[in-house]
Length: 265
Image (tube, rainbow, N blue to C red):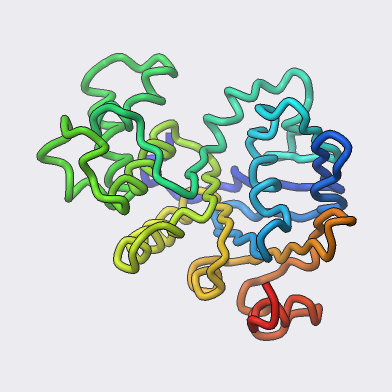
C-alpha cells in the first residue's frame, strides 16, 4: 500500500492504435500515446471529441456498454488490460475513477471511504480506521469531517462530496485515478481545493483528467493531449500530445493553437 512512500514507476499506460466503436459508428480511432506515471495528464478538446470515451477505456468502463468495442492495445505497467484473463474488477482497484458530478454512496462519510476496502476483505476496525483517515487526509477532507464521520455523505457540500469521492477512489490504493471534469460543477473555492489535492496526489498516483478548462489544464497538468473530431462523418483522433508548457506556448499543430486560443471549441 502507498502510505507516503517514494514514487514508483507503476501506473504507466501505453496506448497503441486504440479505437472505440459503438455499433457501426467509430467514435475514436488511431490513438497512440504514453501516459507517464506519477504525473497529471490532461485530455483536452471540444465536446464530442472522444475524451471521456478514451478515459473510460483505461479502466474498461466501456465494457458496461453492450455495443462498445475497443480495438488496438492498452498496456498498464506493460500488461494488456484487454486480454480475456484480465479481471476488470481487479483493474478498477488499480485504476479508480472520479466522475463529473459528485456521486457519493447513500451512507455515512466513513462507510463511503471504507466501502472499497471492505469489498477487498478488510474487516478489522483499526485497519479500516487507518484507511479512512489516510484517504481523507490525501483528499484534503480530513480536517473538515474528522469529528463527524458518521454524518451522511449527502449532507456535505458539493465540493466536499467530490473530495469524498476522491477519498473513496484512493481507499483501494490505486495506481491511477481517472477524473472526468471533476470540478466542472463546483464553485471557484471548491475547484481550487480539488486542484490542490491533485497537485499533492500526483507524487504517488498517476492522474488522467478530462477538462474543458484550458486554464485548469495549464495549471495542473504535466502533459496534455489534444483530441479532435473534425466532422461527424469521421472518428475523433489525437492531434498531438506533449509537455503542457510546450503545448500551450508552442504547439506543433495549428489546430491545437486555434483551440487553445479560443478560436473554436
